[in-house]
Every structure is written in structure tokens, then in C-alpha cells.
Amino acid sequence: MKRAVVLVSAVQNPEEPLGFGECAIAHDPDNEILNDFDLIGVECAVRLKERGVLDEVVVLSMGTRRELLIKVLAMGADRAVWVSCDTAVLTPEIVAAQAVGACGDAPDTLWLLGKIGVNYESGHTAHCLAARLGCPVADAACAIEWDGAKFRVTCESACAIPTYVMTLPCVVTTDLRLAEPRFPSLPNIVKAKRKPVEVLEFSGDDACRSVRVFAGADARRTCRFLSIDEFLGDMEPASR
Image (cartoon, helix red, strand yellow):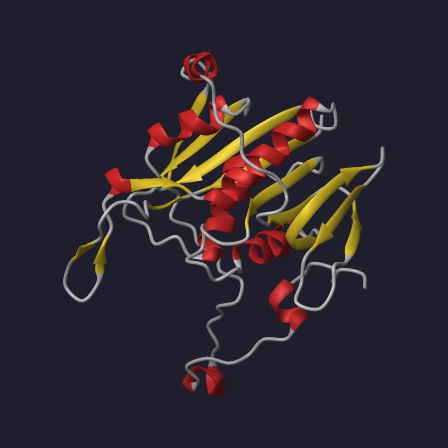
């Protein structure tokens, strides 16, 4: 069974005024909305399911208000997984670890997430997730097609528009031109309230593979750069 797991996150509503605390912006959870890039991923997954490419669409959310999941379920997602982590700092490594822990690492999975939003706009979450799964990643996808055996993912970059041929599992980040999120209808919103939402507690395992503790002479160093082989550990490097 082929499925899509879409990571969704919340951002501050730009139409609401910002509050200020001590040397920082005070985020109000009541003024949060779902990230547009993540909604594009949900729309893409739902379209692939409607064409018979995917069998299930699962939405994964961390730290957002549970009520926000009603919208993505009303868009056509089959079920949602909500990780309760109100006080956790969701770094890219933690998001990747929690995602795999919550949804597993099934081989027939297409992982979708916005190119920014779930990781403080650093753009590293998809790569941390792909490294943990040992699968390829494509950034800023503007088109995803299924040819019966593999996905053809067209991406946008500064100097070219490359197309990658990818098999499952794979990680894809969405760009604005990939799809336009649909507006949920009232009947679908009512149906969404009856769809299953699995609630999980935050495990607290960040499992950051890029942080190591060194003994001996290396213990005097505050940090050092790792080679790609050290970063991936026992994983086989992706073929070029």
C-alpha cells in the first residue's frame, strides 16, 4: 500500500498583530494558521490519491493546535497524527526523529513537506529526514508525476529546472507552483471531525546524528566538521 505522509506546521497569522516579550516576539497560539507550503503538500498528496497513485494520505503535525488539523482532514487526508510537544524546541533533527518515530519507515511512503515552515525556515528538515530514512530528497518541487513505476519530480533552482526520477521511499519539499490548496467545503469539514486523529506524546529523543561527544584530545574542541560518511553513519551514500 502506497501512502503519503505530509508534515504540516503552524505559522503566525500575518493579518494579526504581533506581540512582543523580553527581547523576542511573543507568539500567540490562537493567532496561528497552517503554513501555505505544507498545505500545498497536502493538496498534492490528495490529488495523487484521487488519481489512484496513492492509497492513503496521512498528516503529521507537531506542536500546533489540534483544531488546525480539521482543515487538512477536510481537504481529503484520511487520518492525522498529532504529536503533543508544546514546550519542545522543534529543530530539524528533532522533527525528523519524531516523524519517523510517529509514522514509521515503511518503504512505500512518499514524504511531503513545505520547503520552509516546519524548521524555522532553515531548509534542513527534509535533508535530516532523508538521511534518517536513507532515501533521496528533492527540493522545491513544482511538478510531481507518476509514470506507473517511479515518480518524476521537477524542481526549481536558481540556474535550472531539473527533473529527478525517484522511487519510494523519498522526501519531497513543495514549492508554490506545485498546486493550489483547495478550499474545504462545509460537508467535508463536518466529515473531517469524524476522521481519526492519533495523539502521541513527545518522546524527547532528538537523535541528532551531527552531534558527537569526543574523548581524549578531541574533547577540547567545541565543534568540528564531519565528513559525509561520518554524518550518515552506517548508511550507504546516495548514488550520484
